[in-house]
Amino acid sequence: MENKIKLAVVIPAYNAEATLEACLGGIAASTRKPDEVIIYNDGSTDSTLDIAERFGVTVITGENRAMGPAYGRNVAAHSSNADLLVFIDADVQVHPDSIAILENAFLDQPDIAAAFGSYDDAPSSRKIAALYANLRHHYFHQNSNHEATTFWSGFGAVRRRSFLAVGGFDLQFSEPSVEDIEFGIRIRRSEGRILLLPDAQAKHCKDWGLFQLWRTDIFARALPWSKIIVSGQSDGADLNTSTRERTISVIAHSIWIFGLLSILMPSALFALIAAVALFIALNKGFFTLLARTGGVALLLSGICLHWLYYIYASLVFALVSLTYRPPLKPQKVEHIAGE
Image (cartoon, rainbow, N blue to C red; front, side, top):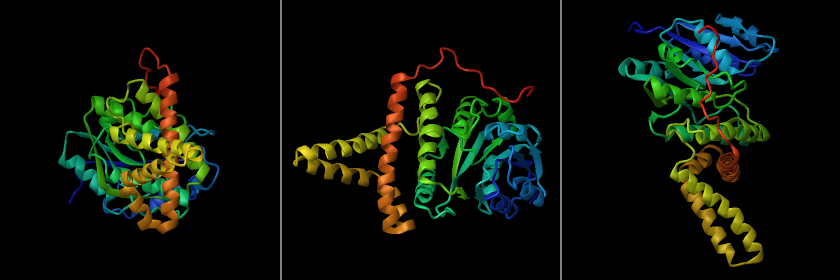
């Protein structure tokens, strides 16, 4: 069947030689071939450019210094006249039918402005930290409301007219962060619905290290996301501050509190055991996925990592709530000059 809309894939890439070949290979193997593939080479110093040229895609070479994925996506998107922009990170390998699933959603539902998919449950890295991080993301998207309130640029699509209408990604995010969440809030507020399509899956090829995961979770995700929520920009898109999530955070903190109390008061041991059991029960689905994927080792490690996740994420949110004073007037979104 002839394609009804023109579709462009946009990939921001910075020193992506370890994953870019898999990324472009996945696109080449897609049942829905893009009309164009545009890579923004963000000042890479490795063989990223050589790999891109070998696949024959369009390459836009950026500044000598990295400007960040928000900037790269904006430049590449403005260079295309496609009806639909599909953003794919350079460390993401889409499944053969996933681009088609995204496109069909836009063809079937003219009122949607954006849509995004999900990581699959088979990340390429088998490190504990990488399995935990990637499966956490997979589980969340597989079990979230399909009427989304934010956007995900790892593998997501937006109508070009909607992209231009909101000014693209905010250039205040000069490093990978929550620029896609902030972008999605503006899209949903002014342009229409955003869909989460859990069947549009892709493999994450990022080889997470433990400290890299913690740094990203805290400084690139929890901190700026908390500021967005506290400033009132989220319009109800408080994904990680729902009643259920807050309840789990309280239980997570009760574990260390009862742990300390049990040293002085042996009777507190029963409360500690109950808190641990409740924490596990409330995360049963995710922990079952960890056990099925990586056995006992990943299950036990994942329980500890997930407990820590709730501890530091909630502490960051509490700290921001107490200390952050947002600007009195909404900040103007910085985007590509002249667009």
